[in-house]
Length: 265
Image 1 (cartoon, helix red, strand yellow):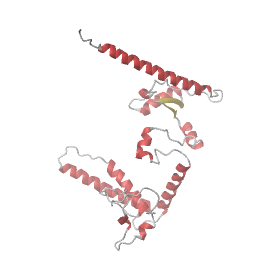
Image 2 (cartoon, helix red, strand yellow):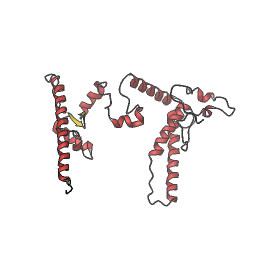
Image 3 (cartoon, rainbow, N blue to C red):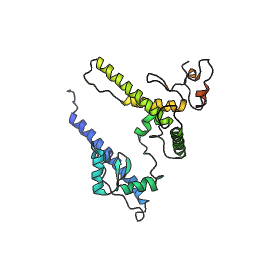
Image 4 (cartoon, rainbow, N blue to C red):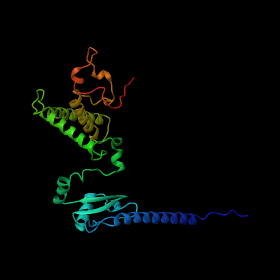
């Protein structure tokens, strides 16, 4: 008997049919869910928002293009200052215009204070970022209040002797000079290695300088750019030359406070 060869066209058509059926099933489930949700709304009180027709699965992502701000501006001219669209499976309400945005952020601030539940937001700092991950609530309000009070205290504290107007400005100006010096050293080292490109990546110096300023204000000690693990708990960092606790540092931070401790031994 001759061996039966499988027709690649037949297998390809089977995959295509399966994908089409799966797409139709997802569209049917999505339409049923949307119909059930819309049937519970009172459109006489809350009329549906206008917006572009979304595609299955991807929503309106294909309409955004490379320049999202220009795409949203074009959609605003077509649908008005308030319209809705879909980014994948997430429904997004887009606000445009000074009056509309002011009403949302000033007069209805609590309603618009939350963050969308996106994977990219939760991936930042493993979900512990106050800016991207934390949802609006009592904890967010408390953290914001603590940050505002800390910035107010540092902006009103007297400088240590420089020409700055406050302690915060003194730290920022001093660290800006250090950051420029580090960038120049990196550019010089890159030139000595024979690289044709003269530019450097400023991301790490900028991020490191901000972290150094925060540590200096919170702990009263400036860390160096070459410090490999400034977030690791090392007891010797809080000891003076005599081996005792340095009161100037321990009065500004709770060494044995809440949180995971990591010691090198």
